[in-house]
Length: 127
Image (cartoon, rainbow, N blue to C red; front, side, top):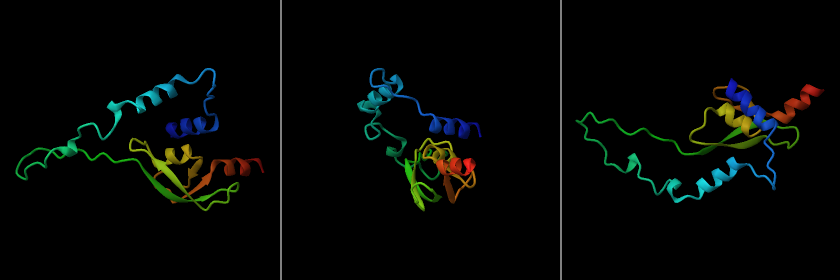
């Protein structure tokens, strides 16, 4: 729940990025992204190794999921969308956090099938 609250606060009050004084964290991220050392294809992974012998006790490498997106049914008074696509990174904490980052709140926290936009919820609260 604390991650969900923190994510909502980041969504509600995004950090200001000034053209005069840019956020150094953003610059660090951009410089790291262009570095050849961070290219996923350039790194040697455990998946390049041959499969272990069936009789050996060597464990299989952990499967690392890639970034992916999923579609979900939504209620959004402002855009009238009925479905949206949510991006999810491989290191994501939970689906609920990814929904809040996209501006939605899932009907359930574990495996939501429907989400409502945070702006719509704020409108309902004000009515």
